[in-house]
Length: 388
Image (cartoon, rainbow, N blue to C red; front, top):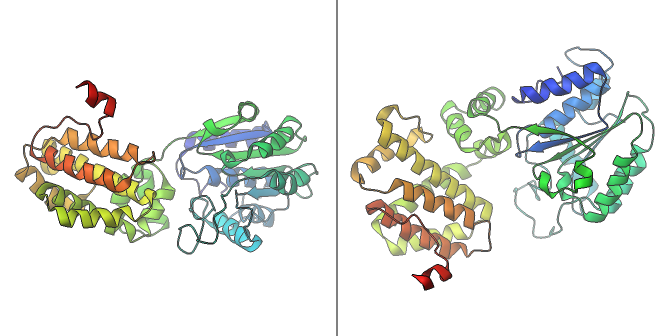
């Protein structure tokens, strides 16, 4: 009953079930892994199981229902937030996460819920300040449970904690109460203080399989079969990302941009390509990365189709005709180079690179690779050029 909302992660579920059944519950857990793999869902289910009084019913008893809805007085659920966040906005997001822990509705991933884009009036970064740790955590976690067996704190995205706040939180971990359980989640374990890491039991969440994601999209979100197939292959093991892709028109438009970009790169229609590059460069870096990932997926499909033909397990199944024509008409294309050039462009988006110049260079290099062999390098350092 408690664990039904968790997608996959059987090893994690078995570990947490054993802790609940045996009563050997650690005072602090660190759930770590890629965004969208179930860390928040597992944290809520674990807290619910710990507070359950043995009802094991469907629908759940009032205690279990309160826990699942994050309304239980002995379960404190924290998300990083800007210092100017309004309480009603915070509460709304927590309510949405209680309904769907995989949703990208926290301040880190959706600064503005209405558009999923940063608001022009809300510029402060979502984080945990020392004031929040003291007010929302320390003052509550030094009490005894009022209704349940444990006093539980779920602290999501703990890696966003400020240094002073981390030191304050560390004191709570060092002197836990007998009935206290901390559940921390992060996708960036390396960003945490070693002293915090050393005081937690680490629970790793693996990337979800494409099959698990597709079946869940079909069952829970009624996503059409063909779209679920594409999205599950593209989301890189994250159900959160799959939801974003499946529920947005952005995916369809970006896929069209990828094909247009590749066509213009080959035909060398400079004016049209510059117009497209200007349009893409105006979007966020996250969207640019999505476009490059789609491009990489398409090139990999071409590689598979060239090798296996109609039996190839391609991701972009609805673009099979275009993929087949590419293989027929550009049989001398250096597909390995095209793939490496796109991967390099994706990596460069993580740096302070000019995205317009990056896309111009990528377009020119892909055009060359479509015609013949290429040196597989998009960017050659100046020092290398000097020595050549």
